[in-house]
Image (cartoon, rainbow, N blue to C red; front, side, top):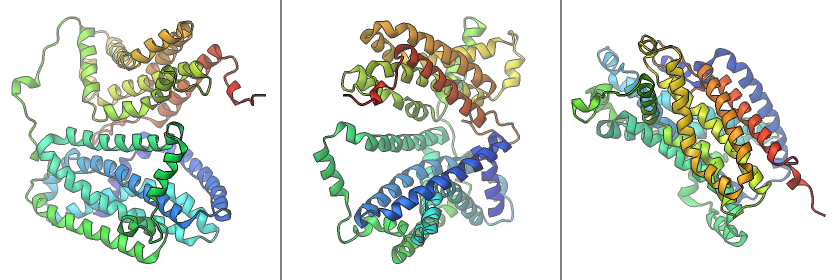
Amino acid sequence: MLRHELIVLWRGSILVRTHRHVLIPVIAVGVIFQGIALLLAGQIVRHPLPADVMLLAANINIVFLFALMFSRAMTASIDVIYGRGDADFLLASPIPPGRVLAVRMLGVAVSIAAPWALLGGVLANALAVYGQLWALAVYPMLLAEALMVAALAFATVTALLGRIGPAAARRAGHTLALGMGIGIFILGQLSRFVPPEPLVRFWRAMLPGPGGGGPAFLFARGLLGQGVDLAASIAFSLAVFGLAWRVLAKPFAEGAITAAAYRPPGRTGAQGGKFGNTAFAALFAKDLRLLARFPGLISQVVYRSLTLVPVVFILAGKFTAYGGMAVVLPLLVFLAGQLGLFFISVLRGTEDAPDLAASAPVPAFLPPRAGIAAAGYATLLILALPVLATMARAPAMLGPLLAGLAGVLLCNLTLGLLLPIPLVRAEFGKTQTGTVLGLILGVSVSSLWSLAVWLIVAPNPFAWLAPHG
């Protein structure tokens, strides 16, 4: 049963559900990463860090990975409990319900640990080549953390599903990942906005001290290969996993944790609606509603809009590096391309009745045009304020900016119709609409348009790199 569960999760992963040939470039990238890791490991061995600094770095990674794993585990838990809709069939089979729940929890744990184990494994493998065998502890340590995270995620999801529903529970997971992503970004930018002295004091206060940091650094010490702490971390994770399984086994067996356990609130009449005006207006309103209902809308938009952070500081006059106002335009153009591709991909992925739309008494070109209009409208709505601020600060740059925005939106919206990026997992028996090729081409198109606009407003865009005599 566990083997079947892992196969189902593997088939639903982004690598397999986009295109089978995508594994070839992924393997090539993995080989390149392993080569880079060997060079990095050589530097780490030749220039070792102090023990307390290593512990602090390991603990920060453990905390960040916990939050990111938890967000992914919540989404995976919702999928295996609510999305598949097969719990009733399994509960009617002769298989013990507790075994079904344990297999699904184990499957989620393995699925959330695998990408991080592969990512951290390249450096661990490289360090092991140099004789640092303690680095191989990353594999059991990440699996132990994933077991604990999966157990907590299942407990959280089962508590949320009956109260707020699967869509809101999925949004809660996305929001957690969003907060952690913003936290990582802020930590990386602290040196730009915080004076050196308070920053040094902050990091010194975070150090574990001579005693190794106590229980708060238990998982960090296990990650660094300290045998007793590694065994204690694994034992603690197994205890949490076993406790969660024991608590959830009974309600799962009783059918309380299934797709049928949630009933959406609201009146029956509120579930319908009537469109007015033209067919284009109805399609446009429908597409905007699809965008608003996408569970990861806010988190994905905020992730992509992190390029607005330097834009805001430059427009406010607080940041003048990298060319000042000249760099604002390519950043806005790149963001427009990525947002446009994201929105049109959401519409392609969430359209669950394309045959019904195709049979409507409207011209065949109307639904795609309405989707392009809705995605473009959502993109321009987000960019309206920074574009107006740019126009106020540098009116002469408005022409190249508008030309770049129009060009990148036209290219990426058209690209998204043909090759949407993989955002929505296809339902059982249906074809996946997203492809990693669309993601690669979309980033490339956005980069080319950004570079073109940058060269127009700053013929020598890298002049800030030249030393000043």
